[in-house]
Length: 312
Ligand code: CP
Image 1 (cartoon, rainbow, N blue to C red):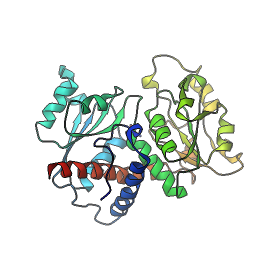
Image 2: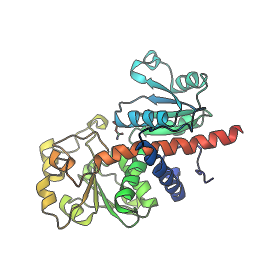
Image 3: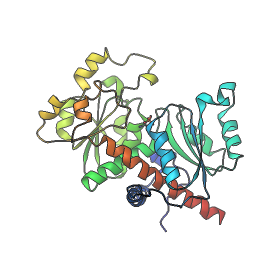
Image 4: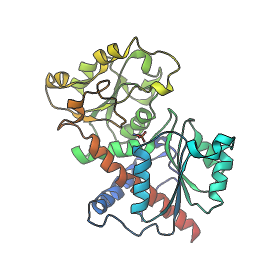
């Protein structure tokens, strides 16, 4: 049986292209499972997974929980807002207490970049990064790339532009790593103040003009402005941001060809994207959400296979 080159999913940075393809092939099988009347397999009956969320989430948290339950794993959920973290307990103490309850795998979202890498040096359980600050969001990038592969047959040689707040986006960084490993051509587009200075060193080009970026691409991945990570004002006003970088139907109708629209969510309708674009026939936003469950089942299944292998 083919296996992943890693024991944790801490970032796309640490994966080989073969890992991505193995995850996609495994997700194909799970996508078939979750579209059956009985959406469940008994694969992980002997595995216990803790979902530790130190930051808000809707999609990622529900998607992981569904993926785990559809693999028949035992699941415990932890939310920092209602935990003893508020009484001063450290991350290591919190996790070690949960592991003492015989947990095999930890899915963690945390506001600090590198929190997953830090934890992996202190505990033995397998760790999946569900988003660490503005650093990486590997399962989002995997489900995004999987959705492109599903729509176009392959990711290689596709022209993909990521538009919006690139500076504060873990989705952007993980997408860039994944798409480049899979042979896509990637550009980023947004206000100069929201583009990281050394982004070209990752093999992507910067296109500041929205219309030029859209004319070039096959796929536009629209990102939200992450006000919660901003300690400064990065552009004069939301109104000006919308005028320069907001995607609406009039702009799309002026393009020479239709393009595919993606968004990781949550959407700020009327800011980075209008409702008529987000809900249009060219949008694959809800396909991304559906694929998220199959891709996360694949990641969990493949990492759990390695845990079982070490135990035997
Ligand atoms: N895409 C994403 O990470 O959404 P949530 O913050 O709702 O999990």
